[in-house]
Image (cartoon, rainbow over all chains, first blue to last red; front, side, top):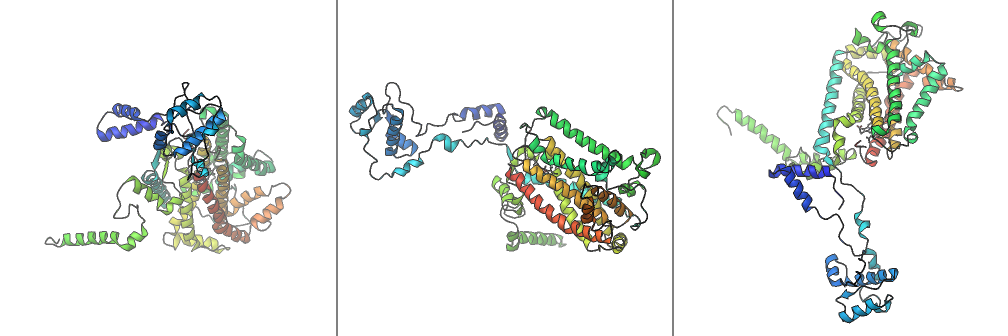
Length: 291
Length: 258
Ligand code: HEM
C-alpha cells in the first residue's frame, strides 16, 4: 500500500470525527494505528534468504496462505537456490522430513537430483503466474485528492455560465453596437483605426517600418508564443523557480496591453498623439457607450 | 383531496401529474439512470458518478477531478467561459443569419432593419458583438493564466500549441465579422487591418489578393468574409476545440497544484 499523504489522512479523519462525534486527533491516531504496515506482505517469489541456521520453510502453510500450489513453491525454491548457489532450505512437510532436511542443508552444492521434474498434473507454464510483488502492486500512482464533478464542478460551471449570460444580456440591453453611415470608399474617416485587438500593432506602425511592425513582430511573436513549451525546458511549475519566464511573459502581457490602450485612447486624427481627457476619445468601438 | 373550495384538489392534481410524468417511460427514457431529474434518484457517491458517466457530458468531463481544479481561483473559469461564449456566439449568429444578406448595400440595410423591424434584433446583435469582444479577452486571459501556472509543460506542450491556434482563429473570426455591418467603421477598420497583411515581404500583393478577393476591399470581399465567418472558421475552430478538450483529459486533467 502506498503511503497516504498526511493531508488525505487528515481530511478523512475529520470527516469520520464529524460523523461519529469524536475528536479529530482521536480518530487520526486510530487510523494511523490501524494502518497496515507499509512493507508489502512477503510474496512467493521473494523467498527469504535461508537463515544462517538453515531455518526451514513450511511450504504447506505458505501454499495455503498465498494460494499457490505447493509444487510451484518447490520449483521456485529449487530454482532460486540453483541460481544463487545457496543450499536449498529445509522444508517442513516433505516425506521423511528430518532426514531429507539435514541431508539437503548439509550438501555444499544445490541438489537438483532431489527434484524430480514437475509433479503430474502441473503444467509448467503456470509458472508465469508467479509474479514479483513489486510488479503488480507498484503502479506508481499516488492517491489523489479528488471530488465528484457532479455536483462540485458542474455547479460552479453553471453559475459562471449564468453570471456571464446575465452580464452580457444587461450590457446588450443598455449599450447598442455601433452602426455608422453606409460604407463609403471615397471618404476615409480620420483617424482610421483597426479593431481594438489589432491596435497594439497599429501603434507599432507609428514607430517602425510597416514590414517590421505589421509582419515581422507579430509573426515572430506568434511563433515565439507557440514554441514556448519547447523553449522553456525548466520542469518546475513553482513560481519561485520560474522568475525569468514569468518576468518575460509579464513584460509581453503589460507591453501588449499598454500598446493596445495607447492605440485605442491616445491616438487621434492622423494617428497623432492626443490626451483623451483633453481632445476627446477616438475609439469607434466604444462610440455608443461614450454617447 | 378536495377541501371545500377545490383549491387543494387542483394543487394535488397538478402535483400528481408531475409525479406521473416523472415516473413515465418517456421521462425515464430521456434521463438516464443516476440523473437528478429522475424520480428514483437519491444522492449517493454511485449516483453522483452516474450523473456524469451516463451523460453526454462524459465526453467533456471525467467522473472526478482533482480538488484544487474546481477552485475558481485556479482556472478563473476562463477556458470554460471562452467555450460558453463560443456557443452563445453560434446561437446569436444563427439568429442574425436569418436577417442578413452578404451583399452591398443590403447588408447595411439589413443591420438597420435588425434595430427597427426585428423582434429582439438589436438585443441579439448587441450580444453577438459584445460577446465577440469579451471572448477575445477571455481567450487571451485564459492563455495568460495557463502560462502563469506553467500548465504548458510536459505533457501539455501540444495542447498549448492547439491553444495558440484557437487564439488565432478567435481573432480571425472576430476580424471577419467586423466587416459584415458594411458601414464606415467596418470598411475602414478592415482596410487598415488588411493593409498590414499587405506588407508581407515578397508576397504582399498575393496575400492581399487572397484575403480581400481583389486588390482592394469590394462587395466581393463581403461575401468572401461572410462565408469564412459563418462556415469555414467556426468549422475549423470546433475541430480544434474538440482536440483541445480531449487533450486536457488525456494529459491527466488540469495541471497543478502549484
Ligand atoms: C477558443 C479558445 C479556447 C477555449 C474554448 C479553451 C478552453 C479550455 C478549457 C475549457 C480548459 C480547461 C481548463 C480551464 O478552463 O482553464 C482549457 C485548458 C487549457 N488550455 Fe485552453 N481554451 C482556449 C484557448 C487556449 C489558448 C489560447 C491556450 C494557450 C495558448 C490554451 C491552452 C490551454 C492549456 C495548456 C490547457 C490545460 C491547462 C491546465 O492543465 O491547467 N487554450 N482550455
